[in-house]
Amino acid sequence: MFLNVIFQRVYTGYWFGTNENDQVVYFKDKTRIKLVTLAFIIVAVLCATQEWSTGRWKNRKFSHSAYFTTYKATLNGLKRWLKHSEDQVQDNRAASNATIDLQERMLRVARAASFNPEEELPQEDDGDLFSLNAMFSVASGDA
Image (cartoon, rainbow, N blue to C red; front, side, top):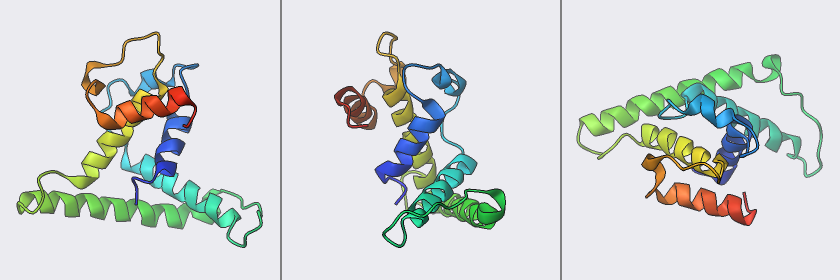
């Protein structure tokens, strides 16, 4: 579910911007998206879909009072998923932590999609299929 392109586009667009700004510099020492950020994105997307729930657009205020309970429940669910993923690895039922894999992948794709073409892409992203797809999407105007 969280691999849906809408989550990636919101993260890349609002947290990284495009190659016209320097937001990407803030994330240079980070290795993955934080769960609190992912929870916020999920709830923001929920709000946006609720605006169209009747088939006609109706403004919904994205506010603390309207969505804080949903945000906390979403964050707690992500934390439980992280714990479950850790348990899967510990019990040798999974080769890697699915939650951390998603967090790392979202950051790699956002970096790749927002990099300045005049600057060199970080070496860690060179062979990454998701990053290459993101760069292609941005270059072709599909992002």
